[in-house]
Amino acid sequence: MPVPPHTVSNRPKPTTLSRGRLLAALTHWFDTDTRNASAGDDGLGIDWMRAIPFLAMHLACFAVFWVGISPIAVAVAVALYAVRMFAITGFYHRYFSHRTFRTSRVVQFAFALIGASCVQRGPLWWAAHHRNHHRHADTAHDVHSPVVHGFWRSHVGWFLTRQGFRTDWDRIRDLARYPELRWLDRYDIVVPILLAVALFLLGGWLEVAAPDLGTSAGQMLVWGFFVSTVALFHATVTINSLAHRFGKRRFDTRDDSRNNLWLALLTFGEGWHNNHHFFPGSVRQGFRWWEIDLTYYALRTMAVFRLVHDLKPVPAWVAAKARGG
Ligand SMILES: [Zn+2]
Ligand SMILES: [Zn+2]
Image (cartoon, rainbow, N blue to C red; front, side):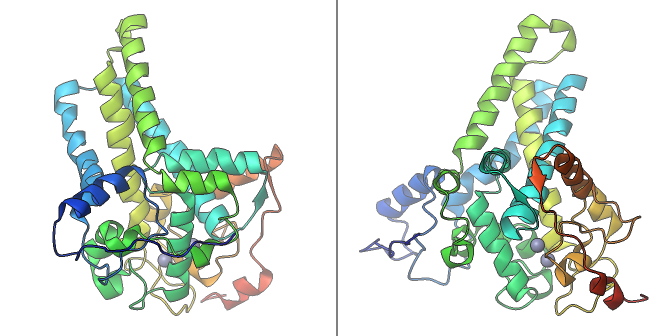
């Protein structure tokens, strides 16, 4: 698909908070148009205006003190964490970024949609950044290397920079040919808003229809959307900030990736990160039977129902390269 050239002209200097820049930031909340990179600066500074919705989502978690708690609200938050973590690891990562299995266009879209509700931007943005990470892991070109940039930058800082908002379209030409994925990517705030509204309505309905559950519209919104999404985000990015620092190295990769059981449990298998950096082409990241990889088990289950197919295995030569055999 041809990518039109960058067309923004007469751009105000990035250091000036002009009305035009303010308007551009507000527009970007709804229309990311990630192809239009911010010219004129290195993109390393945090784009505070554009980051406001993300920061507000964190502040909204404190509303638990107003809305209270109920078992049903916590259950919905946990369920949404689990389903969406699987969408991120199984699809944003293992499918869109690494193409480690195949699926239909309907299933591809369904999980792109669930992934888009996670406030980790669209599938094209995610895959482009992740492919860049593998190419340049733990060098100056890796925007979220904790070794090069430190903990906070690798955990969340990079996500909020002008550079972090951009998508390198040259990295994802295979995905960019799907208009439905381009749409999800460009208007990446739409699906999270729809989920938030749906949870609010669900809570309001349960308050009337099943008062014994002790929930409300506000409570379902705060637990189901804000708490669940913030926890999901920070769990996901531990693979950037912690899985390149803490754990064991089975393979001599060029980067500093590690295998870490606790991170693997938190992220449904992504913690076997040294395995993954050594051989990213396998659908499986826990290479040994005891390396718990919930995403892999779920994908195997989906394969039984023919929802996914052609799951790429770990080749025999990979095991031979492992430290200790
Ligand atoms: Zn990595
Ligand atoms: Zn990867």
